Length: 606
Image 1 (spheres, one colour):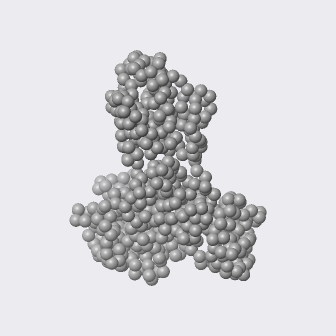
Image 2 (cartoon, rainbow, N blue to C red):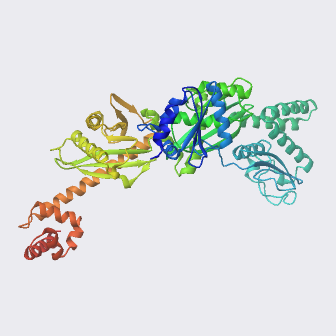
C-alpha cells in the first residue's frame, strides 16, 4: 500500500478537467509513467480510488508513485502528440517501450567465379558484396530463398569450378530448382548474368522484375533467340507463381497489419508490412505485462508510429481500441497524407488480421513456453464467452457418486491452458441427502467461495472463469449461491453428448457450439475429462474407505468412529495391514487385547 495515497488523491482532486498529459514520479524523482487524458482530473483520480479494479501492472505502478506533474494542452490531439514525445524522451518504466529481438540482417553475394546468394547476420567478409542492412531476418531469408528458387541458383555446398562433374546432379536439378552448374555446361560469364538478374530482382521487387524480364523475353523472341526467350518465360512464370502464393490483399499495394497476443499475463505484438503488393517485413515486439486490451493496442500503436517516416495509407488492426479517430488524425499529420485505420470483419482483411495475431502468438509462445494453439484457444474462449480478459486461471467442477452414498465433488485448476495440480481440491458432500447433483454442486461452490471470503489463502485469488460439468440446471443452482455470497465470476457449463463427449458450452439462456474450433474444443475436452477423472478417482477412494470401514466394524468394540480414525491415520489397505498392534491400539484408543484381536482380523481379511 502506498503511504502517500491520501496526499496523491487530494492532489488529483484539484486537477483541471481539461486535456493534458500527466507524469508519474517515484521517490527518486524519476518519471516512471507518462499518460494522456481527455480530462486530467477524471483520469488521474482513477489511479488512487480505493475501490478501483486495477490490473496487476497498474497496482504495481500506484505502489511506486511518490508524486506527479501535469501539463495542460489546448486539445486532445496536442496531448496525444506530447505524450508520444515524452515517452520517447524519458523511456518510463511502466510505458510500453518497444524492444524487439532484431539484429542486422544482410543479403550476401560472394565474389567468385560462380557467386552464391545467401542470408547472413554480418557484413564482415571483404570478399563479398551485401544488400542491406535489413531489420527483419524473416524477410531476408524469404527473399534469398525466393531469388534462388526463381533463378534456379545452386544452394548446395559444392565449390565451382572445382566440383564440376564429380557427382551426379542432385534432386534440385531434376525438379528444376537448380540449373545444374555442377555439370560444367554453364560458363562463369553466363552464370554471373543470371546472378545479376537475381540481384536486380531482390533490389527492385517482383513487379519491376517481371516488367524487365518481359521486355528481355520479347527482344529475345524478335532476335530469334528462342531458347533464351523460353528460359525468361519460365523465370517470369516462377516469379508470378511465388508472388501469387503470398497472402496479400489484391486490391491494396501498401499497408501494415497489427496483431496482439496475450498469455500468462504477458503480451506481444506483430506488425506485418506489405509494400508494392508483397510482404516485405515482419516485426515482433514483446511488451511485458498485460493490461486492458484496448489501452494496450492504443499505447503500442502510439509508440510504434511515433517517429516513423514510412506510414502507409492503411493500417489493419485485429480489434478496436481507444481513441481510434484521434490516433488516425495524428497519423495523417505525421505522414502528410490520408491514413485509415481498418478493423476488418470479413474476407481477406480479416484473414490478414488473424495472420498478424497468429505471428504475435507464435512469438509470445516462444517467450512464455506455451504453444501458439494454447494461446489461441484461450483467446478464442475469451471471445466466445464475451469475457473482459483472457481466462488465464480456469476452475472446473464435477460431482461423482456411487448410488446414494459416497457423493463427492472435484475441483481442478488450469493455469494458462495447462493443469495446475497444486490448485486441485476435493470435497466430500456433507449437507445433501441422496443423489442430487444440483444441490451437491451448489454446496461445493458455496464452500469454496466461503473459504475465499474468510481469507483462506489456499482458495485465493478468484479464477477468471468457472466451468461446471453440467448444463443450465447446474449453472442456475450455483448462480443462486453466488448472488447470496456477492461473488462475481463468469460461470458456464460443459455439456456432453450421448457418448459422454464434450459437445457445447452451456450458459444462462442457451448453448454455444464449440466443435468447429479445434484448439478450443481440445482445451475444453481436456478440462472436462480431467475434472471427471479427478472427481471419480476421489469417489472410488471414498467408496473403498467406506467398504474397509464397514469391514472393521465387524470386530466387536470397533465402531464407525474408531474405523474412520484408523482409515484416516493409515489411509490405505496396505498400510493398515503393515500397522503393529501397538500402533492400532494407540490410534483406535482400545485395550491391548482388543488391539491384538483387531490386528489378527486385519491380517486375515485384508
